[in-house]
Amino acid sequence: MAPRHFLDIDCFSGDQLRSILDLAHKFKAAGRPTPQSLRPDALKDAVLALMFERPSTRTRVSFDVAMRQLGGQTLVLNREQLQLGRGETIPDTAQVLSRYVDAIMLRTGSHEALLELAAHASVPVINGLTNLSHPCQIMADIMTFEEVHGPIAGRRVAWVGDANNVAASWIHAAVRLGFELRLASPGELQPDAELMTWAAAEGGKILVTDDVDEAARNVECVVTDTWVSMGDEDPDRRIALLKGYYVDERLMGLAAENAIFMHCLPAYRGREVTAAVIDGPQSVVFDETENRLYAQKAILAWCFGTD
Ligand code: CP
Ligand code: NVA
Image 1 (cartoon, rainbow, N blue to C red):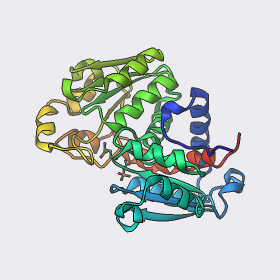
Image 2 (image 1 turned 90 degrees about the vertical axis):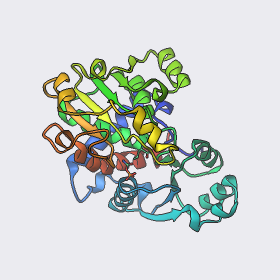
Image 3 (image 1 turned 135 degrees about the horizontal axis):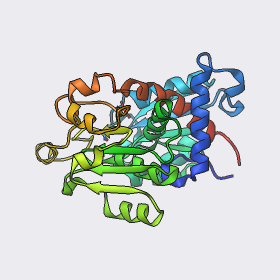
C-alpha cells in the first residue's frame, strides 16, 4: 500500500482538508491528556524522524510534543550529522530510514529533495517547510481563523509582503477551501506565474496587486511573514523592495472591524509588522503557534490512517 504523504495542500481535496481540520479542532477541544479515543492505534510506539536542513522552533517542538502526546516517539536528525551531508543520496537515505522509522518529516531548502524523499520512502513523508511551501503552517492558520470567524469558505484574507513559501500554501488553501485571497507584493516578489495559472485554472478567487490598501480593505484576516526567508539571497535588496509592504494599525483599520492579524513567526517587529499590531488586540499569532500542535496531531493521524 502506498504511504500517505503530506506534501502540499494542493495534493488534497477540499473534503480531505476539511476532515483533517475538523480533527485538529477536536484535538484542541479534547485538551490534555489526549483522550485514548482520539489516539490512532498505529501511532502507539511509532517513531517519527524529524529531519532538519534548516533551523526551526515551532515545527520541531510541535511535532515532537504531538507525537509524544499520541503515544509515539521522535528522533531529531540534523543534516550535518547524517551521511546525507557527506554525499549519500536521498533515495538511499529514504530507503534506509524507512527500514527504521514509521514516518519522516523533512524541512529543507529544496522542494525537489522533499519530492525525491517521498518517491523513495515506504513510510509517510511530511513537508515541514521547503523553499516553495509550508503546508503544516497553513493548516494551523486556517484552524486559527476558524476559531474566530467560523468556516473559512467564502471569507476574505489578505497577504501583505513577500509572496514566499508560506504565501504559496495560502494560495493552495484558498483554491481548495474556497476563500478569497488578496496578495499585495512588489512586482518582483509576487507569486510565481505557474502557481497563479494553476490557481486560475482551478477557479481560485485570488487577486494579486502591488497596492496594500486594495488587498486589506474589508478582509477578515491580514497575514504577513518575514521579508527575508531562510536561504534568501541579497537580504538588503529584498528589504528595499518590501519597504512599503508592512502591516501597521492604519492598514488594520482598512480591514473588517473584527479582523485578525496572523504571522507564522519568527517575526521582525519594525519591518513586516509594527509592534503595535503584532502585540495588539487583533493579533492571534500565539494561537497560531499553539494550533500547530493540534494541526500536527491531525496531520499525523491522517498519515497513519488507511484508505
Ligand atoms: N512557523 C514556523 O514554522 O516556525 P519554525 O521555523 O520555528 O518551525
Ligand atoms: N518564510 C519563512 C517561514 C519561516 C517559518 C522562511 O522560509 O524562512
